[in-house]
Image (cartoon, rainbow, N blue to C red; front, side, top):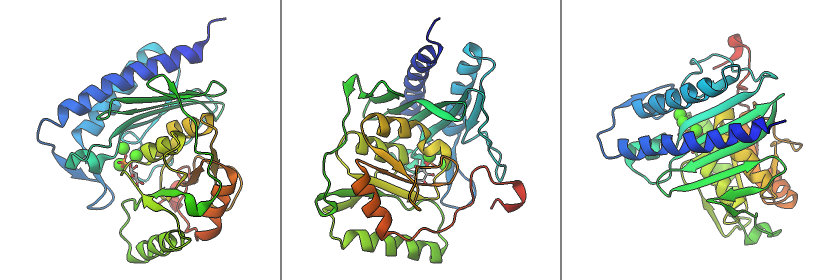
Length: 282
Ligand code: IPD
Ligand code: CA
Ligand code: CA
Ligand code: CA
């Protein structure tokens, strides 16, 4: 029997590369910026164009598959991950970077079957780095195997996080209070490249020990989740236990020791789930 999922993954790599070309070309021109939920939650025509390009290309080859794409999920709608083979797409991860020409921008394509992630492709289009991993088959960047850092001491670690796009002062206070606790452990440093997926790829590549964020969506992390695990890392929820793709929070780390140490320091704040029923979604 042909390996259908390998065919799907090869297709994801090819279409991510094509999408990356579109992003690079768009960076040469003026970008028209629009806002979504807040004035700092940005979107451009390139985000929309790239998502349409990916979905159209996949539909042609795999007409029965389902899609969850950041720019196709209507605002406030729940996104439901079914058992059907599903492509989880973030066409431009790092839209704010894209708007400013800050050179960390990724095209992310995750793929789940029976709600389980099967492969992930993250193309860092300015760096021209193709991160890809298939469940059980290892993680690679431009064909070179990836391995997480062996570090077990938090005070010898770099931790990555982001601020998201919610500027509610109470929430921002919590983000800073969590960062303060982590910084004062002390850790070697706190970083954030402005793309959830690329922060996770840096965990997979062994340059960063852990990445955590609250408020992310399934499309921000689905593809990179496979890459982190296949590079030997772990994905956890803030309450401990395995990551729940729809829970809008994640700790991705090189190992359990570092993940648990991060979780011990930070105080989680509730976020509405990606698959929350309509009446409770904000
Ligand atoms: C965002 C980026 C950012 C993270 C946000 C994401 P977008 O994705 O990954 O680093 O802090 O939570 O929403 O909107 O640029 O695709
Ligand atoms: Ca966005
Ligand atoms: Ca994103
Ligand atoms: Ca995006």
